[in-house]
Amino acid sequence: MMYALCDATSMYASCEKVFDPYLRRKPVIVLSNNDGCIVAACPIAKRLGFKKFVPYFQVQKAAEVAGIIVKSSNYELYADMSSRMMDTIARFADDVYIYSIDECFARFDNTISESDWYELGLEIRKTVWREVKLPVGVGFGPTATLAKAANHASKKLPGATGSFVLCSDKQKQRILKQMAVSDVWGIGSRLEKKLSVMGISNAYEFSQQPAKRMGKHFSILVENIVRELNGEVRIEWDGVRPAKKEIYSTRSFGARITEIEQLKCALSSHAEVVGKKLRQQQSTAKGIIVFAHSSPHDSAPMYRKSIYHSFAVPTADTRNFINAVTNALTVIYRSNVRFYKCGVGLVDISDSRYTQDDLFTPSNDNTELMKALDGINDRFGRQTMYFAARGIEEKFKMRRDFLSDCFTTRWKDIPKIDCT
Image (tube, rainbow, N blue to C red; front, side, top):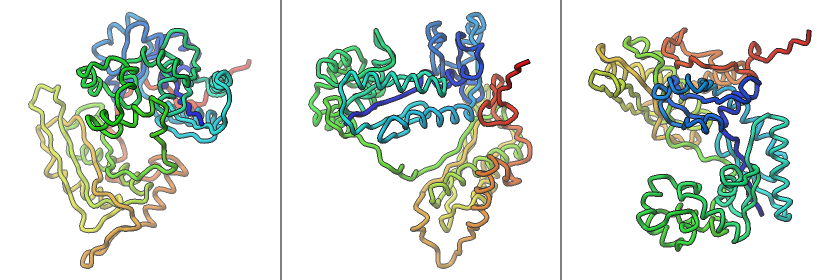
């Protein structure tokens, strides 16, 4: 058995370049919600010193001087391009697990030579580039964690070709010695600092630690990572994702909100989002959390308020969530506060098949209405039908001043070719 990790290089920035040839050789960065921080930078931009998670306002002037092309996050485009990439990769493997929007694990049950695995990685890269125009790296290993390390080697270590096979002990020692501990899948910077205190300075030294000792000091996850680095399969993916125990929808505003009606519309919009997600996993919620706060960067003292509401009967009806939001609003809202962010969260979630009803409080859920609402929006597009509580015009929508077209999902944005 062999595992592979395939991921796109600077996914968001690469997607922006697919349908705009002008950008192919230009430095491109992509910003987060409300054009806040850099969340993606193409290799050209990285070589110019632009890094992820840096607030854009801090580097705006430098970006203009360097000729950086700035883009707002176009999630609709990225999601569609991700789907195309994953479908292409799936043709090569026995089983594929989508780990995130830009990477997936693949499992192969057959046994071939190391050179053949390497050639397969190159073939996957060529096919994805030919059909989707996204650059990907492919790493192979006998465990998922070693596949992740091989993927790191395929792109970031000297002599990288985009495909790498990590299977022999000699290879593992050479590659892991060149990797920081934080480059190991599942090891963050905080854990890396703790391991550094123990005298562990690279991934190879980490792999040589007694697995049970690591588990005792940290967690079973860390123990499994050590075992995986030594070729023992410990991390698998399930065929079915477990249902979420909490569901949240939050977002900061493009501009500060001061009117109660605007805040109500925003919170009602979040209530719709969490309601649909809850029904998609066939669950009900016993409680809801509603919150809103100002920005810590404003001159006025920060204001933060949250309200928890418990339902007498577990529900999946968006109408109940909007009613709870409306009632919470009278406590949360302050006329002198410039609200920066708000959100809604569903908690105490359980499977709808095992919902416990109340003898004295009958459920008012209208499952057929919710089914019709979700069905219409799934068929004709998001927000085709929605509750009036969210308002007709979203005055609180995100600021996306550098948004590109939705080239693959919106008819009016489909690229046009003039052959005259």
